[in-house]
Image 1 (cartoon, helix red, strand yellow):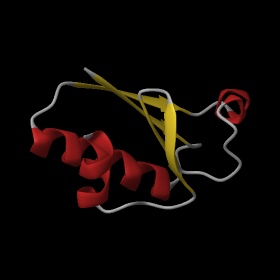
Image 2 (image 1 turned 120 degrees about the vertical axis):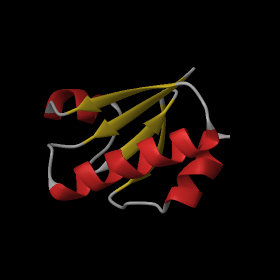
Image 3 (image 1 turned 60 degrees about the horizontal axis):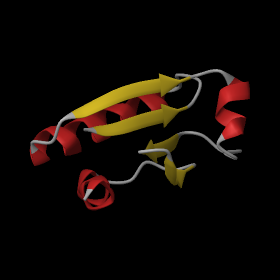
Length: 77
């Protein structure tokens, strides 16, 4: 099971990234757990200074942008 975390305060970009990540994982048919991390202190523990950020299995994959669904699928492989 993949652990997908969305780091951000809940802004529209964060919500869009959440939807894109869900869509990518669902299209791939993989089991995943999605967690939204909204606490600034927790976000900073990942070394992220720009949100939204995408974390997969503990590794920061992107920050400050919303990758396309196809890009997220590649990251999930």
